[in-house]
Length: 89
Image (cartoon, rainbow, N blue to C red; front, top):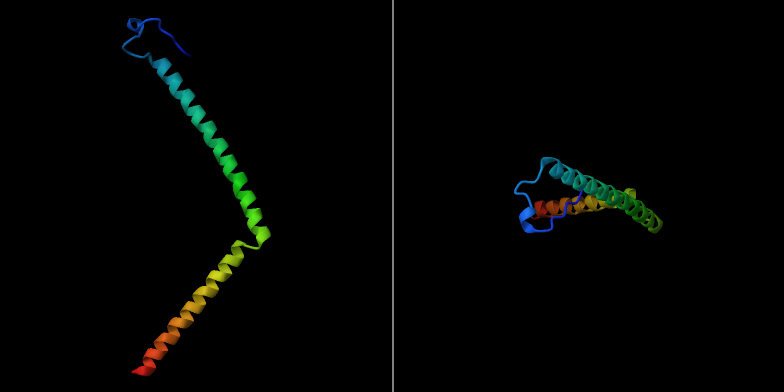
């Protein structure tokens, strides 16, 4: 509901509550709709990028296995360093 005033003097000092509430509700609904659209596009992108990563062989399971292997090697290296220091003493 758009109200146009021909001269500045006609503009009221206080905005009626129903007009304020209507404007706030319209803005809230628009924001919710834009958020819904953004979430839908985000979901579509996530599915698309996940399928592309799967085609390349980069899966979550592979990443987890690689990470555990890296941790295992790091632990073995630390244990060897500790053993080397213990042998020097």
